[in-house]
Image (cartoon, rainbow, N blue to C red; front, side):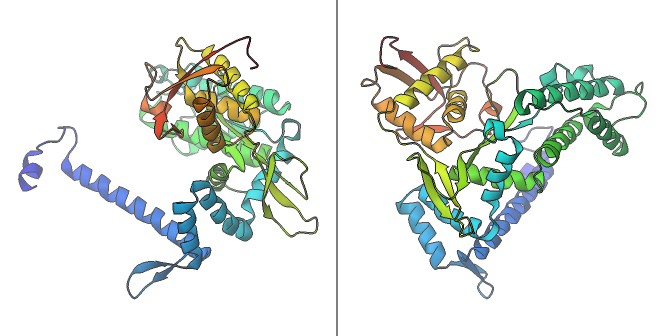
Length: 388
């Protein structure tokens, strides 16, 4: 290590060992902070207890049950067990679901959270020469957001005041010059894009959808709800006219449900005897799922030059059309894949990636596992004369 540090052996000449050590220390502090947060929350639910004398953590009876469920009953039963502790203490999932239906009742609680980088709207980073170039991006972005609101929420809203405020925020942060003719500082580019993205996400969440929580808390609880199947949130939706996140409920809060497709998972014991019901339709003969899968494949392939398409894109379309969680899609795809001859449909699933795909195309999206193997792309042959 002494010689390596002295001569920088085995390292890029652009990266010093000292820098790597500092980076590792930062990562360790980050992981330690996250771990401490998890432990603190687990103590809140009486899953574990910290023993100061031995600097250790011990499982309590609730934690032992949780561990048993995870090891013997699977991920979903474990998630539902932990969910009960969370909901009884915070009622956060009910809040998410009811707010979404109130925000967009005509589209069953669909929330759009647009994210358009400068590049997405046709602005190259190298073309950002003057301050006015970035201001032009902000103006085009405002128009695009207003169009999304009109299309998805059926509301005609001007965002000019909010866009002006965003520009002022960037100027006060000394990231953007007030003088349009001043040279644009490219070193601020990425941090400015992040500020712009977070500004508009927060505006949509709190002003358009009336959520009285921070963006960080919304994302935390929304992704927890996604794992349980209470709602679905996407990092990307395969629609050329929209780029950003979609959020929509997969559950309802009501006193009863006559549909066999809704599963009761929680009772609130309020005056209306409300319960939380998850939408999880049975497989039955799989006809509806295979029909939706085939349609989603065709729609996705229209914008692809390849016979194979990204499985994650097909999954997003199926989950949206059927209002089912990702884990149910994975389960039903596995069933369809194994009985494809009976359904008169041939499904090809491969672990390969499409030419030109990068890690960023997959990093924020859960992989699909079928028969113990991860699959990334899909192709479908079907008989037009079959019952599908």
